[in-house]
Amino acid sequence: MRTDGPVVVALDGTPHSARTLEWGVAEAVRRQADVLLVSVVDDTWQVTAWSWYPMVGMTEIDTQVKEYLAEQETQVAERHPGLTVRSRVLHGAVVPCLREISAEGQLLVVGAQSRHGRQRTGTTGVHVAAHARCPVAVVRTEPERPVLPDADVVVGVDGSSASLAAARVAAREAWMRGRPLTVLHARPTIPDPFGRGSVPPLATDDENDPTHKAARVVAESLRADNGGLTVQVALVDDDPVDALTGLARGAALVVVGSRGLGGFRGMLLGSVSGAVIREATCPVLVVHDNG
Image 1 (cartoon, one colour):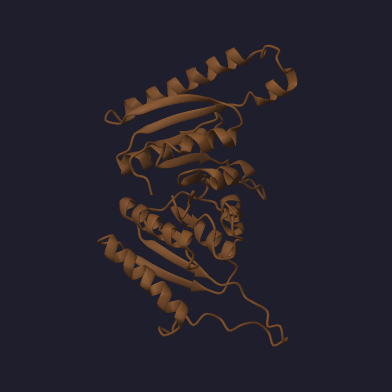
Image 2 (cartoon, helix red, strand yellow):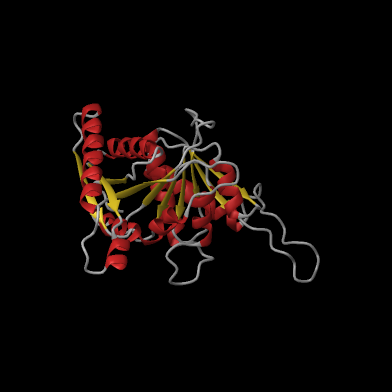
């Protein structure tokens, strides 16, 4: 994973941008990285609607966005005098613009509104996570669920290269935060085709069980690579999305690989990762195995 670029924080001027900015800056401080604040002015509809005609009002919008970013840049610089902060206005469709700028960064941070009732995150975060050229953090928090001091970092693993890359990133994130790491493997219940119920549950207490052995090897490797890191393993029989989002309710961060073993070859983002982005009530970090 690239470590020499800035943390790119995408802001849209809505109320939840303040939390996105706070989270992204804290991450940059932990990584000792620069910060690049960006906002996208989506003027593509003007080109379609007006063809070669002048884009009415776009100059005023562009000026407003520049002023907004300059204000955020100044506030961050005042709070963190040693931090290098820059800003840039991007023009075009949101997802392609963020994908292009992500090539410059070691992390792209985007926001998501807090859930209300059954409301979920929209598709923008999912599409950005799928197409970005660096890891993507989709930031959402629940005001009524503050992060506790002992909250852990959770990572889902299934043996795929993307999930193992995610585990390494999650371990680093947990170590930087001084938090424990939970390595979760969830196996969905599979109905027996012969009508005898379902496959036996994971033998979590049997250290000779292949799944238990594999998870233990991953945990031991993460401990060895991150001195002092507390790593616990959770093996459950449950839908992976339900298991991850369940643990997310008390977690500081959930980390997932972009595509697991169940994804079709060529998919940019697996169904589990996409669902976790939409459902989780804490920030979600999506890692590509080549990221």
